[in-house]
Length: 294
Image (tube, rainbow, N blue to C red; front, side, top):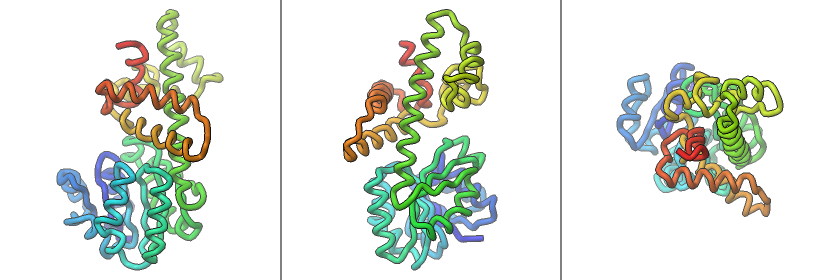
């Protein structure tokens, strides 16, 4: 078993760290929020006084932070890369821009450290149940080291290619998710206007060409999928502000690569309206309320 430094013990990172503890690893955790550290400590983690301290003596360091600027702040400005021992493996699970991910890979390599970018899909429910999907970018040797650690927190660990490719996979995947959720919401609202019952449309579309994750697993109306946030007043889940963040990353990457993504751009604009209307902390499936007009 390994000693793992875990930096970022929030809604995603906290349950992920607990699953590492359940797998028998020793975890030394840090978060700016004291209550998050206290929860991890109650689960068996050692509370580290700083991000750098969490990395000291660790075989592996996992980071789960909000954005690229936070990752750069923690790893470089706060001295986490410097505090780590030579050969330490960094598993960077935040969803950030590809350019920053590759910059962090280069900084780690310069310090004789190993790194993978390993953003996840599955939301808070997946983090709690250890059913996340990890999209991993990095060298073959780094992936081989990261795979068993990630497997303690998820059901699928997929090597997407070299440095930054994990982030590339994540933003492409979430652009699909954002676009399909809006399509499902529009279809359900149209069904309402036409007098078609939600459950009837679900029963038909989930077994035909309209079948998709946004409908089958995360249906945005109460009833058809009892575990979806629609049955809990759209409490996340995966917050709309996080979906908007990922869509903006996808649009930034599309511009940089000269790629046209009109549906992605439309989804970004709609989620921008939803979030700017005060719904940032609502689950992203709650956008059906805006589409419905209430």
